[in-house]
Every structure is written in C-alpha cells, then in structure tokens.
Image (spheres, rainbow, N blue to C red):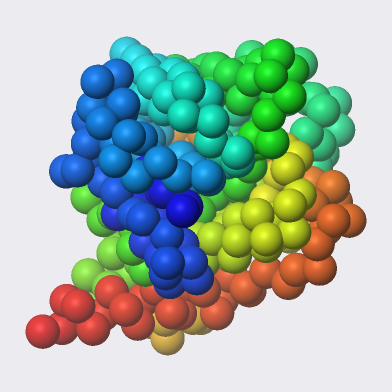
Length: 296
C-alpha cells in the first residue's frame, strides 16, 4: 500500500490522477504535528511506501511574516512521519523539497544537487529553506544510518489546476492567472520583471514520482525543466496562453526575490526519459480550469 500525506494539496491532487490506487490523507484525517496521531495513521494503514507531501507553504510575503510557523510545522511533521515510517518498517519514503533551499549565492548556474549545503538559503525564504534542509538531512541520515531506500526530490517552482489563489498563500503562476482573469486593461506584476525562474506543472512532478518508484530508483534529484525565463517573459507567455490583451506594469516597490535560482535536471534525465509540459500549454490549462470555475 502507498500512503500519501498532503493528499489534498497541489502535488497530492495531481498525484491522485496518476496514482489513483494510493491512500490520500490530509490534515482533516490526521494531525501530523502530533506523534500519537501519526502512530494511529501508520498502524491503521501499514503502508510499504510513504509519499510525504504535507507541508506549510506559501508566497514570499507569508514566508517573511510567519517564519516560526514555517520552520516549526514543517520540521515537526517530517520528524514524526519519518520516525514512525522507520518503526513500521516502511520500505520507501519520498518527500518533496523546494529549489529555495539552494544557496542564495553560487558560482555557477544551473545548480546541481551536490551544492545544496554550500551556503545559506535566500533571506526571503530563510525559515522555509532551513526547514526543508532539515528534512533533507533527516532523509540522508536515515539512509546513512539504516540503509533506507528513502529519497527526496527538489522541484523548481510549481503550478497547476489545484493551486491556491489566496492573497497571501498563492504561488506566482496562480497569482498571475487570477490577476489576468480579473483584469481588463492592466496586469500588475511585483518587482522589476528581470529575475529568472523555472516552472513545472505539478502533474509532471507527480509523473516523475510514479516513474521513480516503479523503476526502483531511490536517489535525490532536482525535478525541473531545462528552461529558465525572466518574470517579464513569463507574464508575456501567460498573456499569449490566455488570449488576454493587457498592458504589463511592474511594481518596483515590491521585492524581486532571488535573482536566479535555476537548477539542473541533468542527473534526473540520465535516469529517466521524460519530457516536461511547456509553460504556455500548462498555463493555458490552468487558466481554462480557473475560468470555468469562476464563470459559473
């Protein structure tokens, strides 16, 4: 049996579409911050594989204003889940981190997995980045000490039909789509539009998880497209995909965030043959889905 925590989130919802036979749980089912609740969960389902997706995540604003919540909740959930996975002899554990855990200052792009700990994470996502580094260290430590077939994936920025669209917890593409949908003239974008970003549809991450588990490939990988775009270019791609004719205006009073954080997919693509969805195709899918739900 495969058990998925965070089953109602962005990645979990897309994983359900490609791995429908797994058990998908959310915070409504068990409180992963409570060790006794985690023990009940594991005793009930006794899975052979756990995909740990439960996490507190949000945008730059949320990260900067609630740093303690981000580090405390994310680390505590992982400690509890991994401890019980070990006690219940779970064969495989996979969890997803974030490219914001990479160092803010590096000498070479795109970033490879081996430089993960060679410098502090970006200040804007510091608590979240440190929390995710702790989770990476937990996985690596279980592998080293107990020879586990456990691993983590480091996706670049994610988007998808099941994303959040709140003012303070939405990811960049979700926020962009909401703005495009609600605007007739102007598309307001935070910052200068100059930083570079990579994006993959959450469905692609779900497919990669499925492939790695099926092929019994248990190693840590970046999961990312080879392509990186300026924020300005992403806004232009989004307008093309949605068919909206809006003027893009950049609010330079708002922060840009990290200028570059593109990561390398080479290690992953040496192990599996995979083609990522194009950004234009993915944004069109998400925008069409958003429009259908809000046109009612």
